[in-house]
Image 1 (cartoon, one colour):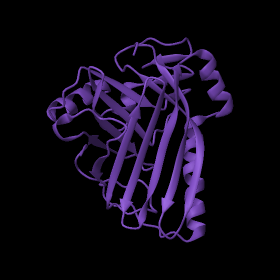
Image 2 (cartoon, one colour):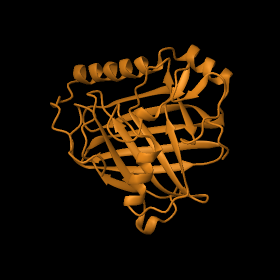
Image 3 (tube, helix red, strand yellow):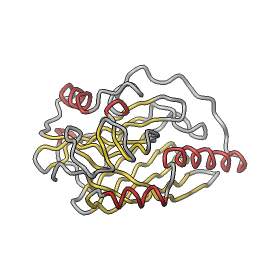
Length: 248
């Protein structure tokens, strides 16, 4: 991969398991970047204002006080993960506004994906990250399933219990990620998928026209689906104290 960012004009789906069913699919824009590079089209910037941008302070570590790729390198090194390069898959900031339910740090040793850090944010200003890898840091392929205990409150309609199952299919032409929250008969299946194309000014403008004020749109859709679940009678749970550890 070159240092030029990739654009994923994709879709995300969420399907609730259990007695109260709910499902939706929305279009979404992600970028896949080398977090140390500053290359890109005129309408995209790193660490400065633009129509679309990615800022280090929004990723890696405490929310709003991120350290970017330096944080990811520290986490991976402390865990003993072998890696030579790191990529960041995230929704870009639009006109300085951003809300990312989840971003992904992808660690590579040569062409092999050796680990993924799933950086999860909720609507309460909190963040927790899950470090995903196979035993012995074996290459992560589309056939592998990685698991992690759920420790972080995301939705008031899901318990902070059970576990996550992750599947990552990161190809040169497309990306497909599947996350399943398994909690007995309850839980959620979430996916992100889309083709990889070079990020261009045209792609940025098209995304803005199709999905204006994208970060506010994301929040609005989250609250809309929450209202639907409430009307369907899904149990509502108060927000618990977040985990003290930053990553698990």
